[in-house]
Length: 294
Image (cartoon, rainbow, N blue to C red; front, side, top):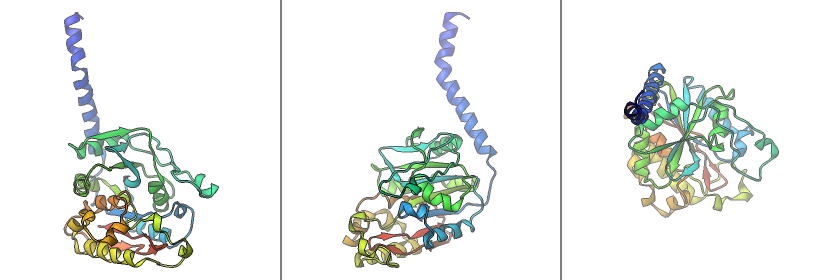
């Protein structure tokens, strides 16, 4: 082969590589069976201890799982992967991340050995263009994901990937990204947002931590607003969460645990039912309210 032809082929290598990846992506997409539209979940994950405790909230997770067809795979948007830029886990076997401290040894010993799905990661990346997405091989499954998914699918037999929350984006942009994932619901993919709608750790009422459904007055005020807007389908008010009362500011002192809700709401179609469950307060300043759509 002469030098000129060799250099010409070399210059085409990135294009050929991209075409091969695109073909592989289409093959994966085509191989996924068309399914009835999968529901979408927002799970109030609460304390990491919910991973190993028996309580009404984990019972709620298990109960809701029985109403959902077995997914092909899971895409989870967790409050605990809050990053500059949007990232998606793309490894074959994500690690179980114990991203907390001060808890019993038993909790740190929990492993959730679900497989990943590099193919689903690549498809997710393509769907939300032109938003740039980094395929990540360093993260894994943080406790916002595995501590709740283990109650839905305890055998860890469903592949799971995570998508991070870009802290530089507006609520409206997060909602728009979610809408672009709609196609996955028709391919058996269960999309889960995991956080807490009301999440103010600085104001936890430790003296009444175990008191049933205990919420401060401001938490009750914000909770009533959140639930009304969700049930009424007024998602614009929820997207613009920063433009509300002092009660909302106390409920959402930082947006990391709130924004996963917008990924769930962004996937709702007009004719779909929105159902609340685990709709209770914990320790005054937290809510476990969870949502099923579809």
